[in-house]
Image (cartoon, rainbow over all chains, first blue to last red; front, side, top):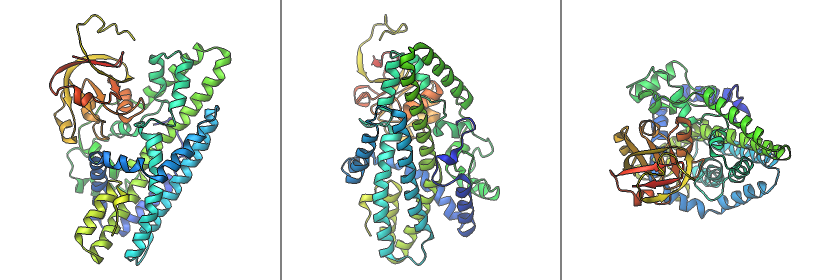
Length: 325
Length: 116
C-alpha cells in the first residue's frame, strides 16, 4: 500500500481499536459466528453484483443519495481542488464514523425486541444511502460524476493528454486492496477449508493487518494459488517518476495548478483505497455482517425462519430499502 | 490516436470505449456474465464483461486483457489492470452484446477500440 502510511488518519476507528473490538467479539461469540461472518461477507460481495441493476436503480432514486451527491458536487466546484479534497476527506470521515457507530450500537444492544431492531435498521438505511453516495462517487467510477473527474481532466490537460505519463499518475503510487491482498499472500493456507482457516486465524489472533485488512475476509486470496502482482514499491516508483516527468514538462505558471491537482488526487486516492479496505475487507464489513447475523437470529426467534432468511439476504446485498419485518 | 501495432492490420471496428491501460493484443473473446465463468479463463482469452468483480483478479492476471461495458479510468477493472499491466478498455456500453463469445478479436487499448 502506501509507504509508511498512517492508516489511522483515514479510518473512523483506529486499527488498534478495531483489533480490540474484534478480539472481544471473538471471545464472546462462537467460532461458527465468525465463520458465518467470513462466509457471508464473500457471499454478499459476489451476490450483490447479480442484483446490481436493481440496487443501482434504488440508489439513483434515493433522496438521501441525491442530497449527498449535491453536497459533494458543490465541494468540487472550487477551482482549488486540493482544498476541495481536504473538505471532502472530512465529510467522508464524519459519515464513516456515524455509520460505524450505529452498527456497533446495534451489536452492543441488549434485550432488543422487534421494534428496536426495526428502528435501528430504518436509521441504518438512511446512513447507508449516504454512504452509498461515497461508494458511487469516490470508489466506483461507474457514474457520470466522480470526485476524480475534474482533477484527472486538469492533470491530463496540463501534460497535453500524454497517456503514458497519465497511466502511471493514475495509481497515485498506491496499491489497491484488491491486488494488495494477493501481494500479501502468506502461502500458509492454500487449500484450507474455511472452518480450518478461521480457526487458525483465531488461535493465532491474526485479526487485522497494519492497513486495516481483516484476514477473515481474505479467505479466497489466501486459500487459492499465489497470483503475481506488481509490488507496491514498483507502483510507487513508477508514480514518482511519472510525477517528476509531468512537472518537468509544464511551464512554471502551470506548475502550481498541476501540483494542486496532484495533491488533491493523492489525498482522494488514499481516501478511496482506505474506503475500499474499510468497507469491503475491513472493520465496517465486520460490524455490518455481525449485526446482520444478530438481527437474523432475533428475527428467527421472534417471527420465523423465512423472514430471517429474507432479511439476511437483503441486508447482505445492500438492499436496505426492501427490508421490513 | 494511432497504434503502431495494428494500424496496418486489416480489421473491422466492433465497438469503442475509454483507454484505461494501454496495449494492443489479439485473443479469444470470453463473455463473462457470471462469477463462475472466470474459472474457465485461459491465457489466450480477453475478458469481456459488464464490470469485473472483486475476486476476479486471478482470471484477469491469466487473461490477455479486459473490456468492460461500464466504468471509467478509475473503475475497479481499470485499477486492477493498471496494477498488473493488462491492456484494458472500459465504458464501451455494449461490448458484451456486440462481441461474440469465442470469436477472435483485437483489443487496441492504444486507440480505445475493439476489432474483429
